[in-house]
Length: 206
Figure 1 (cartoon, rainbow, N blue to C red):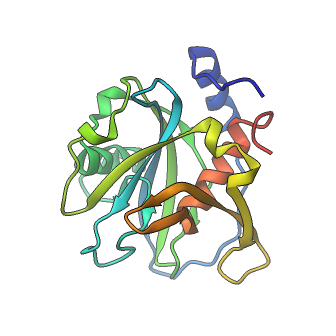
Figure 2: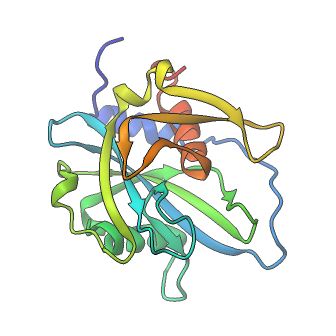
Figure 3: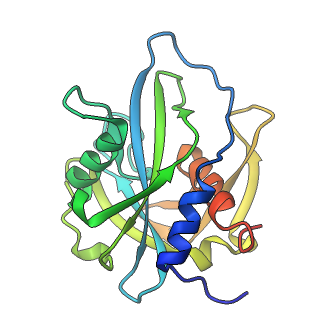
């Protein structure tokens, strides 16, 4: 398989692919709130097409120490859920909204308790990313890193598991090396990651 590249043409293709995402029938609490996350495509310091991840601070009240995408709960001041994702990304890793092209959105999914409707967005950072130089909010993010699309597309780094004890299978991604004690990307982050990659890279991601 040839190395994957991010060009104006491929990004436009990604946007078209995201127009027709699957609709899942998950259960939510009656008073479920809205949240948004942003899966960021980028070029890393080696100019490899990649995805940006964060590691949540171990002092966080929920999901402490887990690998995630930037994101959080909707704020009354947000004009839209897309703005929620962009605001949270700026707050967590310091990437400004004007440096991000939103390519589209993926299917809404619940958090573990069904108290949140999580709306995933997919974006592209125009500037190359050097995770070590990102201005991360230490109250929320302890670490950031990139994994290349070529790495994520390898069947050898993926494993199918049952999603939250349901009949729905989902993909867990093994990391190339432990990152702050985590050895894999799992849960909602991997569910979104796998779903988006299947949509935008059907020929490379099997």
